[in-house]
Length: 383
Image 1 (cartoon, rainbow, N blue to C red):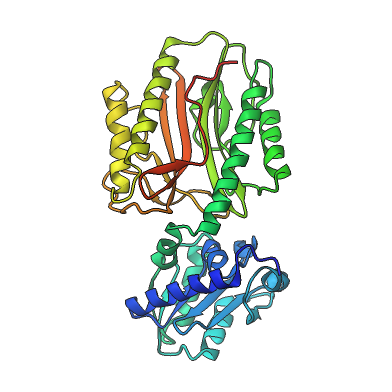
Image 2 (tube, rainbow, N blue to C red; image 1 turned 45 degrees about the horizontal axis):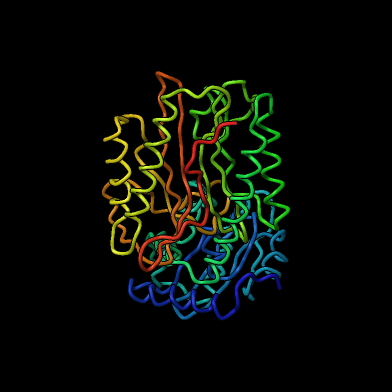
């Protein structure tokens, strides 16, 4: 069995979810987020691109409804013993198979929470589930039940986050070494991936935003990578993953003669990142972290050039994104606690001048502040 946590830790997580169900008056939970399945049982698959659903009863009962392709995946990577298979066939309605599984656990007439916020549960599949359960049981949105439990990481989880951070730092060193005039951005990308995978890391849940020239202003992945120019800016936003736990880094490397505006933007990003990290401490709110970053960049004269969010929590995530909630935006009331993990990114984009400058790193909230697990450069990188 390929478990990355002890059975005892997985059982503690499920018991915590059951206690939360009891508080919310739920008899069980229908789980559709792959992250939740991995967190509670170890179940590790990319099969969530097709229909699958897991049931966790308030009494601890556990069952999975999935396709035949994932039968052995569930057997070998998880503690799930009851795996039901819905059959691929023309006109198949796997929500009916899910309901039949629930019926075998005496869920008829019960109150069930549903993880509606799940990439695998498309709008079509959600309607299919609602139709199958209509008149069978009562349902309500419980998308945040497991998500909130996942916010504070255990020591075992934090060990994986730290290892991901080490791999990200190693990839950054490779990127800075290879970012020279004439280098192909795609080749740099490949060498960074090589370092992570050779270190027993995983492909990240997001494609990496990387680009030179005007493409350095893009903060989303795009196809087609150019060549580093003689005088250029190259944006790197990437993450390493280890056992699916992510740690991200972000910065802009420069080549050739450096524009003075670039230097000023870099100084502002350093000051903003330091201010945000000082606010990243127990008892403060996520919104206060954003405000610290915004005050610093506004004071430096960059109002209108930074984004409406400056980061998000990190953990074990699956494609299409490594971003997890809560996002770091003004007014977010989430209270910070030790064991939470956040990627904070300071991003300045000036469409008028065509200049980009970014700086970001991942930190663990500790008892008295925060611990950086990736390390963005505090000196401007020029090659």
